[in-house]
Each structure stands twice: as C-alpha cells, then as structure tokens.
Image 1 (tube, rainbow, N blue to C red):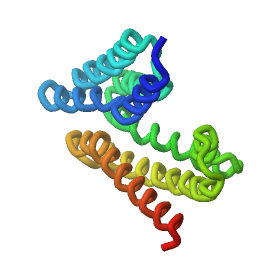
Image 2: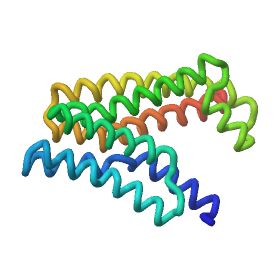
Image 3: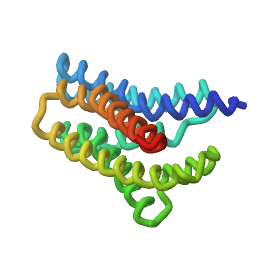
Image 4: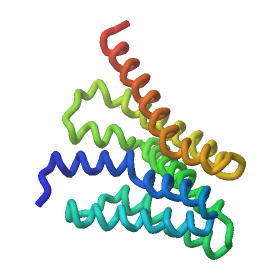
Length: 190
C-alpha cells in the first residue's frame, strides 16, 4: 500500500505534470514529422503516463485519468478528422471543466476549497476567504481556458505548448502567491 504522504505528493505531481509530457512530445514530433506522427506519439505518451503511474504507485490518480483520457480522446478525434486542433483543445476543455467545477461548488454554497480546508482542520475564520478563493480560482481557470482555446486556434504549436506547460503553471503559482499574501495581510489586520 502507498503511504498517505506519498499519495498526496503523487496527486500534486499529477495535477501539475499530467499531460505535459505528451504535449512536449507532440510539439517536437509535429515539428519534425508532421501532425499525424505528433498525434500518434503524443497520445502514446499519454497512455504511457497512465501505465507508469499504475505500475509505480499501484493506483492512477483521477487527475491523470481525466487529463490523459481527454488527451487520448481528443487525439483520436484529431486523427479521425485529420485536424490537429482537437488535440490542442484538450487543455482548454480541461481548464473549462475545472472552472465549471470550482464555480459550481461555489454557486451551490459548497466551495471546494472550504470543503478541503475543513478536512485539514483549518480555523473557521478562513472559510469565507477560501470561499472567495474558490470563486476567483474558478474565474482564473475560465479565463485561462479561453486563452488556451485562442492559442490552439491562432498560435503556433510551440507557443501553444509553452502556454499549456509553463504558462499555466507559472500563472497559477503567481495567482496563488498573491492569494497567500492577501490572506496573510488580512489575518494580520494590515
């Protein structure tokens, strides 16, 4: 059995890295051998990520299933239609789904971050703040989904891959850093 901390680390790694390797592989192969081979190799690496996680951790995280599953499905649609745009829309759809999930939890008065905070026994004073963060994070993912869709249609494959990999991660870390600073400032009455 996988220890609890190891499972949490794997879930976090899957959240940030899930689907990045197939996108990098797709981009490199697409530039060298064309979109068909890029799709085949990108989808192959998505499947490989699932298999490696299954054998290494004896469990595949939900984030990995969703991200790589959507990648393989969208890649399959791209192969059938002979249009690589479907593969490139995977990040946008994933981010839009996350936005709907976060905003939906907030709208139904069960904000995801509040629910998670209660499990960690954080002070009740943070509940309102975490509800607000859930809403703002949902808006962040919605805006990023629109940008990712725009990039899929109008940007080069390399620029699209950069947005999908580094762009999302860095912008999310920056956004969350700002949220942490605001929480600390508000808690200390500044």
